[in-house]
Amino acid sequence: MRGAPTRTGSALAAGLAAALLAGSPTAGAEPAAPLASEIVSRQWCKSVGDRLFSVSTSFCERSRLRPSPSTSIEGRALMRLEQPPRLPRRSASIDADTRAPRIMMIGGIHGDELTSVSIVFRWMERLERPDASELHWLVIPLANPDGMLSSPARRVNARGVDLNRNFDTPDWSEQAMNHWIARARRDPRRFPGEAPVSEPETRWLQQEIARFRPDVIVSIHAPYGVLDFDGPAEEPKRFGRLRLNRLGVYPGSLGNYGGIHKGVPVITIELPHATRMPSLRDQEAIWQDMIKWIRQNFVPVNLG
Ligand SMILES: [Zn+2]
Image (cartoon, rainbow, N blue to C red; front, side):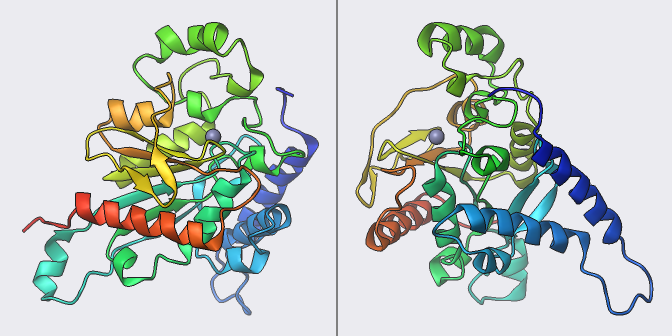
């Protein structure tokens, strides 16, 4: 299934171009046409709502996600939500000089791990709580929209690349292809691409890491039911029922790129099932332990 973009993809790309044209602001236009970004967001939320049992289109539309300037291979929007911190009231001067911990949360790098996308939507509802709202968030619920929205959903992107083997790690050129041939036995689900960061989705994630400068990256997968951790920080022992169990370091993985190469701690949350959500109680337990771990290990820094 590795090949050229599908017809749906071309149609989508054309639709996106039309939406961008239609949305260009016209002085004095009445009534105001929806902005291009709103049209793109609605189209994206409709597709995601149709695919995910636990996420409705209307909930997605209310989620404040906005398209980035980058798109997937098939022209789908790469959506994100950035929520700056709401610091507790002190004096204005202290607030202005305080850098809150920055958390980047990513779901759906693998398109067939549907729960990894749904749970990010569930957790986005919790960002307004006091303990979470003091943090600076960058949330990307679906890093591989072409994979998740193809029929059936696929782990890889539209060019058949495993995005979690495509990050630009120093060992990529020497090891990624060898690893794929010898260890992954040319499994097409684990193809690392022809070159490091060859895919627009990986390029975009790396750009977002460089721009946002997260203190910690939380990357969500399924179905191994464990926590994994790479990088400099006190490792978390358990979030809810998920216990630390290191899965190994792979050439081109996000844990390798962020945790080892860039020095940004990367927590990988492996949910127990790819298509069945954890119970509400387990969703809450994982979230609470994660926030507690973040707040213990990363504190606001006064830059003044
Ligand atoms: Zn995965």
